[in-house]
Image 1 (cartoon, rainbow, N blue to C red):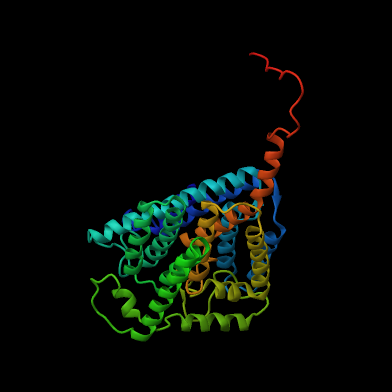
Image 2: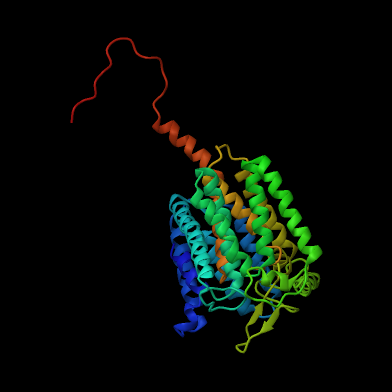
Length: 399
């Protein structure tokens, strides 16, 4: 839970106003991750071999890094995050810690979404960068947080038949659209379609058609609008121009330059990469999928795909009744899968979205194992169903 709180604070404008160097916040994140990873490792249990291979494959990319120290330090941070909240280690303590952190994250996303709605309605000033950022450091955090909050609220509304959650699910669309992130809108629409088709097939089919119609209309009728006071102004101004084209092209060129091992975690040579005054390389990959491909090569991408596929297969084939928790994991997963197409946060251990992704993955892995544990627990605790004995029923001894 400490890890989640530290990442949240880093995503706000608070670090700007308390005048604490960014390096200090990075050290705080590393300390929190180190504590979380240490607790998980100390708990013993088993290690998922497929994800250990992923960590080793990511580490192999360091041999091709232009700046080994920078890439190595970023890999250490990424490895600590994966060990702390990801699906690598399985023991009771790690499972419980991931579950508690996930509950905090789910509550936080819906709470922040409600705050963003009130913030926008009251026309309070935005302190960060972008169209509508509220108290976050940029609008590209407000949009995915609101999108995740919307799909979680919708899942709660459908399960509990709660009009309050339904209101939040609808109202949460306002700050998400106001933030001006097209990929967040697409990701939210895809997650909502998935959930409605799964729970309300007829309604889901109608909504999917409407959503496709809106997307098609946006592509056909997009234009330029300089008015920033409208909630959809940011989306309209961006239109259908692919602002990620240069970033995607650079990632493909990086992959071609080192197709087996990649160019190293957090390394970049083309569009979206810049060298800071300290000499460190800062990269905006433009896609989580292409970030893995370019930075870790075919070895990292293949190992990650296999490990992810095994985990998702276990989650999808788990023998358990549909539940609210399962639906929340599913819709957040759909959102992240679509959002990752045009946002490259997956290997950025300092990104709140990266923390959410690996925490989600850790809980997906735990959910895939729950039926076996639950069945074993029931078999131990439940009395055997034998025929009723003949004669008087023995009474329990008094204490």
